[in-house]
Length: 287
Image (cartoon, rainbow, N blue to C red):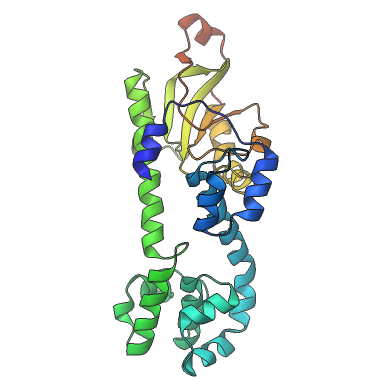
């Protein structure tokens, strides 16, 4: 998957239609669905984009239902203690196995709901060997291993993909001779707002000024984009002015509605450093 992403850099940047996104969100429920839908030319979405849409839908549904399942934690744990397997219970409840295991661990060991670190179930999910009960240890390990959407291995794969695409971004900038400050360099300078690349000399991208670039190894759907805009992009715009967001798996055209954000799914070939004269007339960076 990562090598395919790297090879995709430089291709034409075309957002998907909102209708195509809505269809994908409704029909793509499993990786098998993603394979079938990726072969449909009328949809125009890659396998990676469809997997991202599927994962986002599952995460949203899980977040919405976790409160209900935690309210029934005692009954769920009783079923497990009566001999039912965690993976089977998860399938019946339409809940990712890792999240079902979390519910049982929180109930069984009186752990604080949703707590992180050593006081939460996450430590036991990452290291089932810490669980003292042999059957529960085996069941939790099986639940985590069977889960394609949640769990330590999935989290690690997502982080790796994100880091890979940040590396691709830096390679694209260096290959074009575009000076930039990395997120790490910005932190070393004490900056509170740290996009993946801050551009000391702005770029012109399709006639628009770009002062920073942020890499997102995901598909840009309305819900995730709204969250990114509120928690990250708005502060970048306030601090540095307009920027470029790269949604490497594509994005729904409906989210491309801001004068301050250029959205693309690959680094643009048609970009250039602003000239000295253009810089003299450009607005100052926001402070």
